[in-house]
Length: 332
Image (cartoon, rainbow, N blue to C red):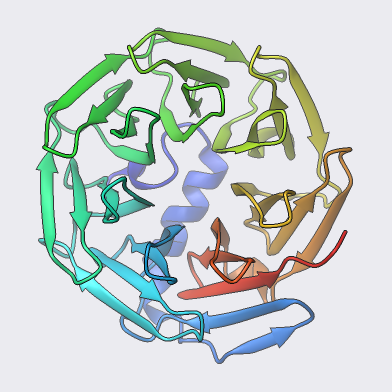
């Protein structure tokens, strides 16, 4: 599996942690269901060592997630029952997943250099990206009803129509490492540049603007639309950054030393939620107040990506725990 499969080329610390966990993940036993406070965990019972990565709410009142290490797309019902569907091979490296405008699940295949489409009944179709070894990672639906995705190795933002037509747009900064992408409320797509320390904005016509983040090596990772702009996890500064649609940055330091903020999403309570790879799920209010919820044995389980479920809870993947977690969105 190439280095860029999940964590890009930018953060040596995060990349090393990911690759080290991948070597030993098959030996990790499936956990028992655990309830501690507001956190519930469900083991991925279908496949050992799946390395659950991206997660999204599907059109069928279930959550769907990418099983990066085994080339499968998983489904978890609200009662914790898991099923999964194979891609064309075990080494395709599915990374991020989103519900498309056609009510199918669309996902990046980082190792196979493809975009996949899976119906809820399990019908698979895969589209090869024109640029070889582009390492697609983040994926999102744009306001034009096309699929937009980040190509880390190719330094491009890609666009794919439901009929299979590709367009690619080069990122102005060389070797920027575009990684995660989200649709903004301003009618554009926003993406992180994990290697350059910038956040980019691309219009549906392909015009790109870049905004540098403060700090020497912020390593922007995931990105989500939230109140008053877009929100980004920055592992290099142990913080979450908020950017207005004009590009103004507000930095919110995280309270726990040595955090590894990764995934981020807007929760059902309107707050911003993030996954901390050191073992917590965090919530941020609009005024910057941070509350954290510990994951049992979280430092060994690597919380990674999040999504809001149809039950108005926040669901998250555990890379090395081979499990899916759930956090109740408690009142602030």
